[in-house]
Length: 176
Image (cartoon, rainbow, N blue to C red; front, side, top):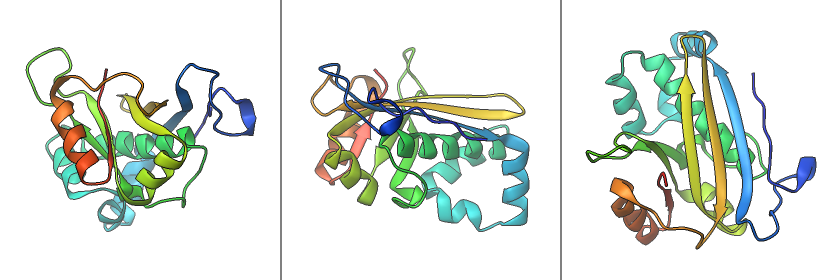
């Protein structure tokens, strides 16, 4: 089950909201049970779609399949926010990470884009992504807002990750 809303430009694709700084919006929902069965049937699927860091983080969670389902939804939501779909870039080009620290944003999810995903984001003028994840036992949902480059400033523990990613030619996006 997937659903997407792209940009303020309507159904025609990822549009720019006049002056608002929003490049696009994407949302995706994944059935946790279907995803769990996929992981059981195709053990190498996780290695093809998730970075080592994502797999390690999910392995520390109470339910690995639920955690990976939420990350998969995030990757698809980023694609939708950029006005594209599966196949435009490798799923490992979008990595879901968590912030560090001790304040209210500790463990908040954010995305780091590399490779073709970062190039596509740059071509669309997207320099920052806002990510929200939620899940129940049955469903994992991700919501992404792609914001124009230069709008707002990264805060909290992900700032250093954003600076490092920028130096490495990728896009890191922290929660605001």
